Amino acid sequence: IERTFSMIKPDATKRNLTGKIVDRLESAGLRVVAQKRIWMSRREAEGFYAVHKERPFFDELCEFMSSGPTVVQVLEGENAIAKNREVMGATNPAEAAEGTIRKDFAESIGENSVHGSDGPDTAKEEIAYFFAATEVVG
Ligand code: GTP
Ligand code: MG
Image (cartoon, rainbow, N blue to C red):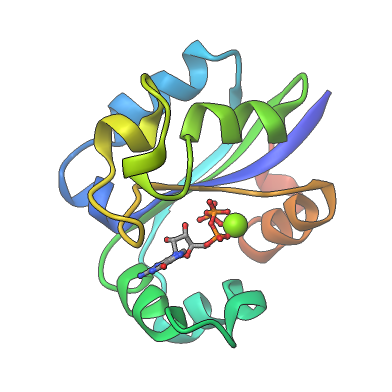
C-alpha cells in the first residue's frame, strides 16, 4: 500500500469543487487518510515549489498558489502515486484525457485544479511539508 500527497488548488476551492474532486479520488479507490484546508503564504508556496524555482512560470505559480485556500491531502491505496496522476490527467487541461479531473475542471495550464506527487521520494517530502505523522490516520 502506497501514500501520495495531493492538493486541491485555489481555482478549484474558489469554484466550490472540493467535494466533486474528493469524489473522483475516492471513486478511483484512493482513501483520504489526512486532509485540511489551508491558505499558503507566498513563502510556503515558494518552499513547496522550490524544485521549479528556475522555471519561467515560478512567480506566477507561487502567486496563484497563495491567492486563496488550498485543500492538502494524503491519499492511500495500491499504486496511489500513479493512480492519482492518472485521475488528475495531464498538466495542461487541453491535453488531458476525457474523464480526468483536469479535463473536466481545470481552467488553464497554471490554474489546473489539482496537484499530485510525481514519485515516492517527492511524496514523502511533500507529505512531511504539510502534515505531522500524527495527522495521518490510515
Ligand atoms: P503538479 O502535480 O502540480 O506538480 O503538476 P505536474 O506534475 O503535472 O506539473 P509540473 O510539476 O511540471 O508543474 C507544476 C505546476 O506548475 C503545474 O501543475 C502548473 O500549475 C504549473 N505550471 C506548469 N507549467 C506551467 C506553465 O507553462 N505556465 C504556468 N503558468 N504554470 C505552469
Ligand atoms: Mg509536478
